[in-house]
Image 1 (cartoon, helix red, strand yellow):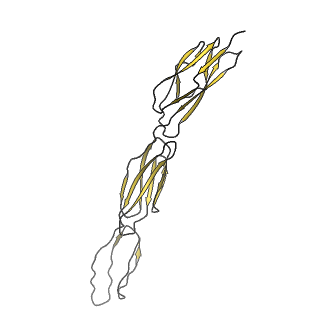
Image 2 (tube, one colour; image 1 turned 135 degrees about the horizontal axis):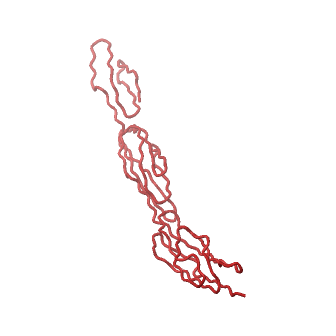
Image 3 (spheres, rainbow, N blue to C red; image 1 turned 90 degrees about the horizontal axis):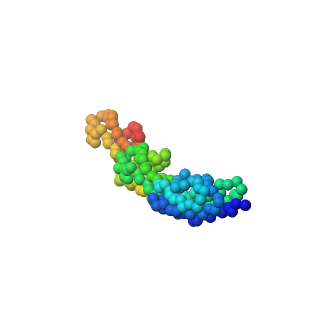
Length: 227
């Protein structure tokens, strides 16, 4: 009879996201070759097989993902036919600090209907939302497109687009939107008529829907609205 024996210590490792430190797995073997099985792609080992007791170094690649921590399991197994043995090795690694970086953090827009977009660089999953009803936002991969209605009020208005990630660590970023009131101009501000009936044509330029009215019954307007 051959005295088969394998002991592995420790069987659990924890790494930081950016660590380059290597740690040691002690494998004690008596007359039993061993082999590593089900290797994890982001874990590195100084040896994958052996026939004697060994100290092997274990390290991990940097985890650049800002989502949750990752976990991997591989096995130290006996590499003989007459004795089956395996010991699982658990490896966990923290996620990176999540970030969400839009390429622009504010927009000053005219009062008309607008369609605009910006790009986002990030190492985590994220969602987008707006805090006002006149802003509509859509996520398309790493880009965000947004549209505004025309500002038919007489003052500037402001809204915020928020990018958020929720996980083991949270992250967020705000984009400030400021929109001017819609402008409206007429081709002239003064009309002069003779003492007979007459008609004058005005050209209206407006960034939003408009209406026209008269304070006197002897003045007729047509049309009295437009876009």
